Image 1 (cartoon, rainbow, N blue to C red):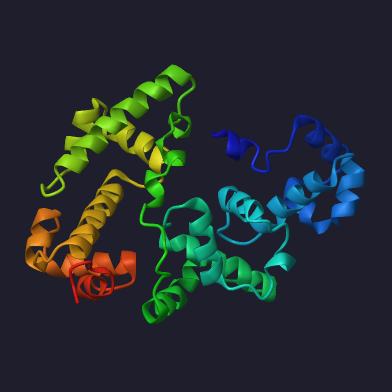
Image 2: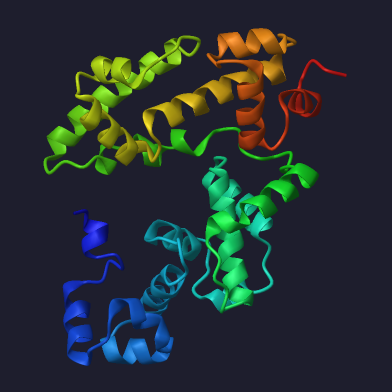
Amino acid sequence: MTKEKLNPLEITPAEVKKLRALKIKKSELHLHKVSALQQMLGTSTIRAMELFALSQFQSIPSIGIRFAHDLIGMGFYSLNDLKKKNGAQLTDLYEQQKGVWVDPCVEDQFRLVVQYANHPNSQLNWWNLTPERKAYREKYGYPANRPTKPWFESPQYQTAKQIPATQEATQKDLLKKLKIALSYMNSHLEDAITVAQLAKQAHLSQYHFIRCFKSAYELTPLQYLTRLRLKKASLLLKQSQTSLGKIVISCGFENDSAFIRLFKKEFGLTPMDYRKKFGTTSN
């Protein structure tokens, strides 16, 4: 069991002891006012605000501690702070702050917390807002200054600390093996790569390879591979006049229709519309 599962609100042992004495559950912290939490726990105002926010944000279905921390990092300490906000605009701001573009489901989560801020009795999950997000992005697209680097290439996802292992040396060794598999991916994007091939490159069993890879990068190996292929395709569409058929082959996609479907899901535009909008060699 991970540390986050053992202690999802990252409450200190001293705080846990006080909560037990007061018979207050960690998941119910947001049912108390911040001023009351500050007094009961004998902590600072900002600490009480953080604990309140972590509890309240995670009370929303399908919202976890990582996204709760992200909201706090953006300066939001309650659902009340998110009233009248716009999920798409929050996503654009978040990407600018992180310097990377994020998985589309992150925008669905922003939309969800705004939904609950305005409608506390809502019963939605983030995936219920996917159609709304798709319709919005298809109509309005993304900002011209949207970061070009994908979130899974940020330093946060290049660290051995994400890998489940008790010894730091083991974590570093596993990360080194995963990077060998990543290097193989990058140099063989046009090939029909299997998980078995990648696990062999990393000198790990398939089960161990998939488990470590997903812990480190929050994607399965094949999902990551698809992202790399889509990134290469987007660069070819922007920087060249290579035909769609050749791009499909050089990026390792099965066929034109599969490529177009995946590309539109990722970028909100068809490949040709993407080229018209961002291509450097088009009129």
